[in-house]
Length: 396
Image 1: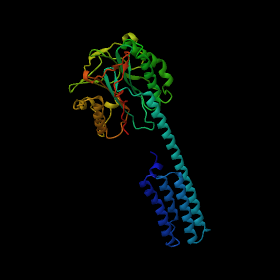
Image 2 (image 1 turned 180 degrees about the vertical axis):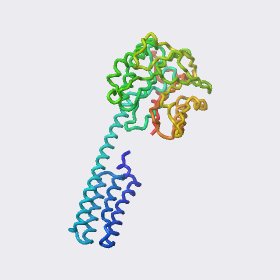
Image 3 (image 1 turned 60 degrees about the vertical axis):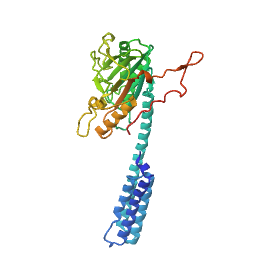
Image 4 (image 1 turned 90 degrees about the vertical axis):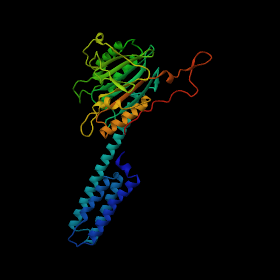
């Protein structure tokens, strides 16, 4: 919210009355003071103070009132044509004009910032299309916290897509760096994932295709002029078959996911780790999967390093795995609400880096709702319609 909008509120109007009162007080005191006492130069305080409370129009109006008050003081104290009063008037006019000009520049920058944030938010929504709340036998919830910067946009990414077979593909990643430049790099990864999720039969083939795409296109979108260092993307890619309890995982330099089962936490460290995407070091044949059990009722918690690197005011990192152990959740949304509230209490402010969560639950059998079949054999949704769209939270 820009400063001039604050004066549109009742409390803002009351504050703008302060410089007007100063003009009256300074004028009355100066008129009743001896002729050798000159308080008129203090009138410049009024437009200067107004500039911190309102926009350039109101600041200019207060400046005009201050100049008029200086004229009144000059007329009552020796005449308007005295050298001292002329100098004071000229100084007040010049300083008021400068204050109005600076206020105008500030307001123009504020409008540009609002437009930039609007564009960034739209781009973020287009890039990070909300995953469905239900996909196959899975229930999904997500949370994105942008770092506190001018654009409110970052390089964390995630997506969920159906594969050609009866399985679901999941990715979560983190682009090196943040800001508007990072969104181009994230778009390369997400575009390659959404295209390849249903095209490639195995997870190694999919991650190899992601690596090829990032190595080919990352230099075109990376901001190498302002950030000449290495550009890469850490990523965690999962393949979750609809049947059975198996999950395949390839970890490309990303923080390990957490498996929550019956109140216990298991950190799923990769036995066959792969370098981050964009390093262009290993051939596709070197991508091997790690497999683990994912049973009905289990939760998979995926996150980016902005979560575990979030610091408290005392400098302590957020102990995600320790905190999650104490949470009792009945759904992915419930788990994310608890983590979000606890993380905000830990850092006490906006995160210093982008942070993203993705929670996936293999829903128990009694939570799955299969579509009814109409008379012609085609699927038909239940009477109460499709599930509602995902409702992400944003920490303002």
